[in-house]
Image (tube, rainbow, N blue to C red; front, side, top):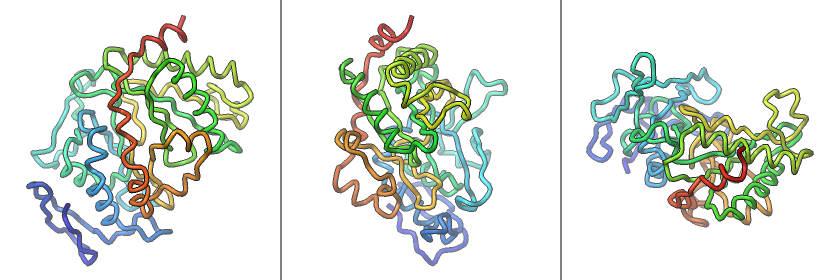
Length: 307
C-alpha cells in the first residue's frame, strides 16, 4: 500500500503495484463535518482493495464523481476518460449506440485512479464483461419512505430472508450506507436480466400481499405512505448501486456494510459503519462478503413467484 503524506497538496506521483499514478490535492476536504480528506478516502480504498475488487473486477464501472467533496457539484459518467492510463481495462458495450467504452476496475491501481477522480462511491453492473446480459447477482433494494427508516427496512429484509432460506438460497444483507437495506442474491449467470427482474418482482409483490401494512411496490413516492419500497427495477441491464464496502457521500462517510444475520434480526445503527470506524468492524466480523461466492440457481424463484 502506498504511503500518502498529509503534507502533499498538489499533484504527486505515486507507485501502486508497479503502476505510476498522478494523485492531486490530497488535503482537499471531502467530508467537512469529519474533516475527512481525499487522501484519507484513497487510503481507505487502497487498504480495502482485496475485499472490494472480487465484487467489481469483471464488471463495467459507472463513475459518480464528487471532485469537490460531498457538498460540491457531482456528476454521473459512464464513458472511460480519454486520458485514462493505457493499463486501465476498458469494455466497449456492443448494445450502446456509439460504442460506449466503460472502465473496468480490476486492479488496485485502477481503484486508486478512480478515487483520485472523485469517485466516492463504487458502482458497477451486476453482470460481467464476459456475459454482460446475464447478471451475477440479483438485488432486493429496500428503500424506506419516512417516517420508516433502517429498522423498518431490516424488518422487511428479515421477512425476505426467511423466504430465501426456505428456498435454501445463500444471500448477503448489507446496509445501503444510507437508510436503506440491500439483499444481494449471488447467481449462476445463466439467467437474463429480464428473467431475474421478473422473478424478483414476483417475490416482492408476493411479500406485499403478505405484509401490505409495511411494504410496497408503488413507484410513486407520494403513494408509498411511509412504507418500505421494494425496488425490483434495480435488476436491469446497466443499472448500478453502491457496492459492497462502498463509501457513501454522507456527513460521516457511511459505508455500505455486510451484516450478520443476527444483526438483521436484532437491528443495527448504520451510523456505526463509517470511514473512521471501519477498521474495528473488519477486525470484529471479518469479510462477510465472501457469502457472494455461493452461487444460487434462480429457478426456484421463477417457479414459485412468476406466472
